[in-house]
Image 1 (cartoon, rainbow, N blue to C red):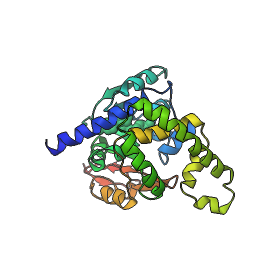
Image 2 (cartoon, rainbow, N blue to C red; image 1 turned 180 degrees about the horizontal axis):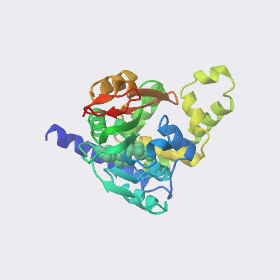
Image 3 (cartoon, protein in one colour; image 1 turned 90 degrees about the vertical axis):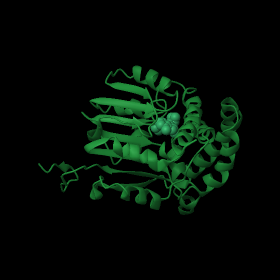
Image 4 (cartoon, helix red, strand yellow; image 1 turned 180 degrees about the vertical axis):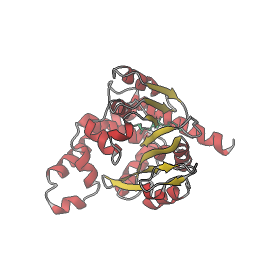
Length: 294
Ligand SMILES: C[S@@+](CC[C@H](N)C(=O)[O-])C[C@H]1O[C@@H](n2cnc3c(N)ncnc32)[C@H](O)[C@@H]1O
């Protein structure tokens, strides 16, 4: 088995595990508008409106449901797994028709290019996150943007120590066992911890407790969301925790990203959002957009 086929089969296992998570959720988005906007920032509606937009690794379309309401000219969601079924069903109910869902591997995916490609919560589950990023960048058209979000190595020590052994074990169990007999009871103490930290956030020492910033964020949601996040963590066979230095090093490998457009932003103390503007040929202008050398 060569490197490529090994990588694909590992990603397929991940995608089929996620499909079990996504296809057993109630219909609609699992995210609030506030969560969507937070994930997308520093991008905003002006980066979507009238633009061709691609989401790589779209799950059940929870982000697409919000994206489509920002009026892209066309929205494509791809996912390797069968969560494309629930994504299609969710998008059909959105009332918009300028979208398409495809079951496809994001690694090596080829298109005519999009004004915006975003990839949220996917790269860290791939056999090769950098190969995934190459595909994100390759599908952005000249002058377009990309935006990614990954788990950080920094700020996740407790998760790496406690969740990783559980993931290695329970990702091999039947999904219903992991969801109802592991994630459901685990959601209770995690919910209590997050709510307590959030209620005591005015105390300065609380901000230094493990996952404090993340808890302030997730404590706004109901317990079902906690169970979804925990199940999502346990059901997937592979997770990389990515250091800021790795993100910076990856971005530095792409000659086509306009250097002054690059951002790497810490989110909730335990993850990274990063992105930039693509420029192929021609000189980049001051605002980071392409001015073709004609
Ligand atoms: C944590 S989910 C994120 C879904 C969505 N972006 C969101 O934030 O709600 C990760 C998704 O990536 C998909 N995935 C994993 N490997 C993939 C690949 N090689 N190509 C396309 N999708 C992939 C999984 O099937 C899963 O739906």
